[in-house]
Length: 260
Ligand SMILES: NC(=O)c1ccc[n+]([C@@H]2O[C@H](COP(=O)([O-])OP(=O)(O)OC[C@H]3O[C@@H](n4cnc5c(N)ncnc54)[C@H](OP(=O)(O)O)[C@@H]3O)[C@@H](O)[C@H]2O)c1
Image 1 (cartoon, protein in one colour):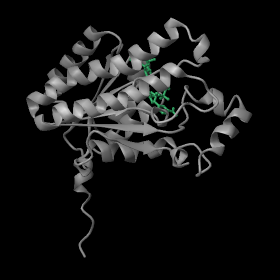
Image 2 (image 1 turned 180 degrees about the vertical axis):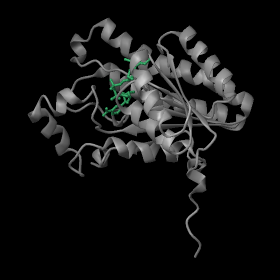
Image 3 (image 1 turned 90 degrees about the vertical axis):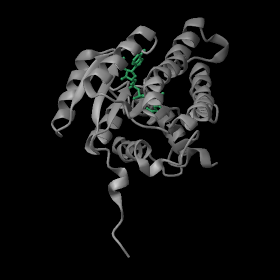
Image 4 (image 1 turned 60 degrees about the vertical axis):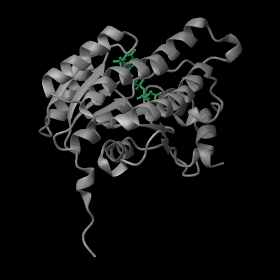
């Protein structure tokens, strides 16, 4: 028996763009990719926070370019992609992660709570994929990882968020469509559907409202939230050639939440 071939997980020399890299899960994706050898383009609206993440990434010996980008502004996305290509020459991975939520019963949800979430989580994801996809089609190679949610598959338990679940379900549909259109052009398109991980989007439910947190965790067979470092290995797998035959589908990382 030979030793395991781990070179398929190696991302040395690759360039990845992570949107929503200023805080939360996006920082974990950036850390994981940098540890596996990637140079990073870190995108979000808060440039000061991106600078901090970039400084951490650079300590591991990799280049990190913070770019201010609002995913609801197509001109921001195009400018960020142009900067990435001019700095690194190629884009191998897009982690399409920037996202927001709005918690309100559907019957009372405002037009704004609907539109803001859809324009960030769905239209923003599409425009980032489109802009980066054009570069990847030209390269005949690339991996686009769209961040969905386990709530792409089921309604949101105890926390009403119609625009969020609708946007994340649509991200799965978009992933399939892009996989069909761009697979033959060399671009891999897949999704990651996380369960509960600690971030500004979840902390209020799990740490500020213990009763709600317990009810939510009751549905997780592993009985705990995901650990942020568990996102690191997962994103490396999805960004690397180890996952090359995974296409058009979502990997669900939910501690078993969707199993019952
Ligand atoms: N936490 C969880 O348990 C969980 C579970 C499933 C899925 N997710 C998904 O994971 C992604 C990250 O969420 P998170 O939990 O890490 O939340 P978070 O801590 O609130 O982070 C959201 C990130 O998105 C960025 N962002 C928001 N709107 C943006 C816009 N218009 N343009 C550019 N960047 C924008 C934010 O940066 P700026 O404010 O600096 O722009 C921030 O970096 C989201 O898509 C979320 O739906 C999270």
